[in-house]
Amino acid sequence: QVQLVESGGGLVQAGGSLRLSCAASGRTASRYTMGWFRQAPGKEREPVAVIGWSDGRTYYADSVKDRFTISRDNAKNTVYLQMNSLKPEDTAVYYCAARTSWLIRREVNEYDYWGQGTQVTVSS
Image (cartoon, rainbow, N blue to C red; front, side, top):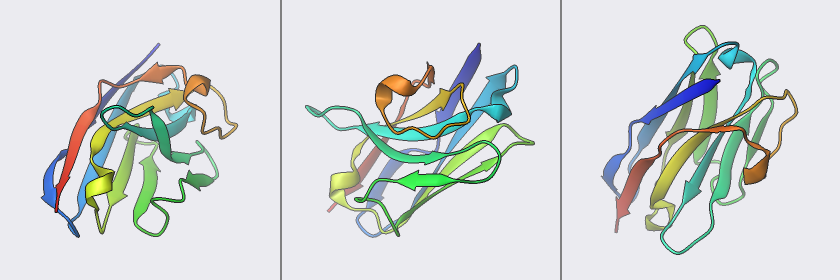
């Protein structure tokens, strides 16, 4: 069992930055593939960024490439999402998720554990 707790969301103006954190607890949490997903009102949950547990392999959605950076600190069992140059279309609830496999996947249904989500609102 893995518990995930996100933090760092908030209200920011367009062009600003936020850093989200996801603290994972539970057995071997540092050995899971970790992902950030987001869900805007009336839309389906979508992948934002994913990071493998050992070699730092990453995946980014095209909409956030060159603006967002995912990283992890396995010693702290924490995953981060640095979000720069934020746009109003980035407004959503952001969820941290863990996958009990070293294979990187971006599909929502491939993830086994989810956090409660943190709201990110970008004003124009």
